[in-house]
Image (cartoon, rainbow, N blue to C red; front, side, top):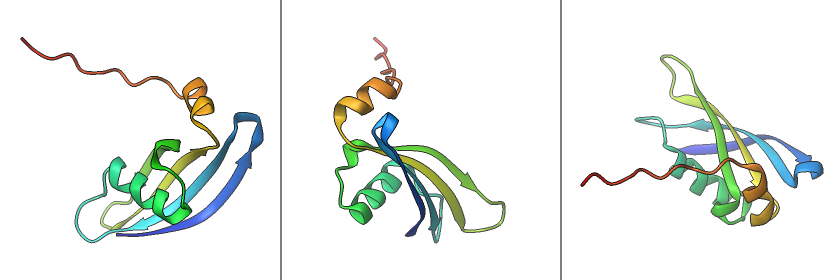
Length: 91
């Protein structure tokens, strides 16, 4: 998987950087965890501050456009991003 950052836009009002990237892959579309890890290593930032918002694939092609947010701190992320609902275990 090869990830290239196409555009970065600072958004100081929401304490984040909005990122647009292009990813080229060999087999299946990378999942959100793989994309988060790749972005974190590319930006040298902790993966806990990165939120993948959208992955747009193209029919018959092995590439995708990725939209992500990099928050300045954990407090900003917690205030702005919706909470993930945890799955309840079946008894």
